[in-house]
Length: 416
Image (cartoon, rainbow, N blue to C red; front, side, top):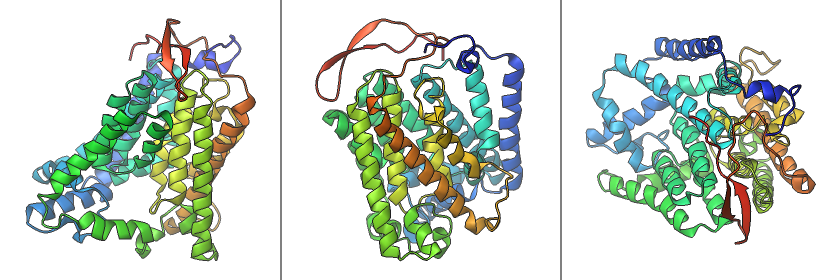
């Protein structure tokens, strides 16, 4: 990163003073403590998974609950929680979710070669916790999306180091817990990493297949959950979905037309993500922006699609702020996040069941911003890292998407 003394990035990537760390600890501690006091079962969404595991232990099918939208392997993963007292769960669950979000932010910083002890690391996480409403929503719900928030930047960090098979294993483990990162399969297709792709698909397949044999309804995910996800028939869930296919019909658009528009937007997003990947400029922005484009494209068409899904991509993009040419250097990224400021009341959108309109605006605005920047930067010069990031200029030969060889710097030797 090349920055002058007058550039704010130079100040951000310097070592953070201890008072900022204490402030961050206070923000995260208040978040966890507030949720622990307000919830009984560690969050509504986590309670759904634990209830499914308890049903399995009692000999019933976990898919009797239509809101259990996970693979069979998640049932076994949640089973240990059934042995813990509720008083302990109400503290451990928000603490574990916050830990996943913090570790995911740390991996995103590492991917972008930003020191973990910098001002930007501290202020960025504090800003997400205090100024981005989906952060608090995810901690309060105890949703297992937190595992995807950690797994995606960790996998991309491994990809940036050429460890595609390990990245496939990480993503596969995340899919076994919650199939949210399935669009990352396309990243491995773009890169033609077939062995790593086999690992990515094999881990959840083996975990879920083995777990399904232990369930009284082994095919419940395919006979009950998939139809629910594809058709979105639950009236309660539909009120909180942020995808255009769910929001536009509430504004009077015919459901079929809304779904066609969502599919077209998804296809355009995937095409732009592929174009971004093919532009193999050096640096981590290529990996982060391609992955973010794929995930946002999927969220446009997936049913359901909630506000806390945004945490999968927003920290990943935000960590690239010190890079010139990053999506976060443009105003539209920040304008897209304005509706997600906590405590801000919007006319006619005050009821909780109308929150989906704000979430849909953020989702669509982020998707348009990322895809537009991916296309627009096709003629731009490659971004360079700022001087505040401690980087080692040791060259290494890497294979690009087209099978050619290119020189690219190794990952910096910053402490983590």
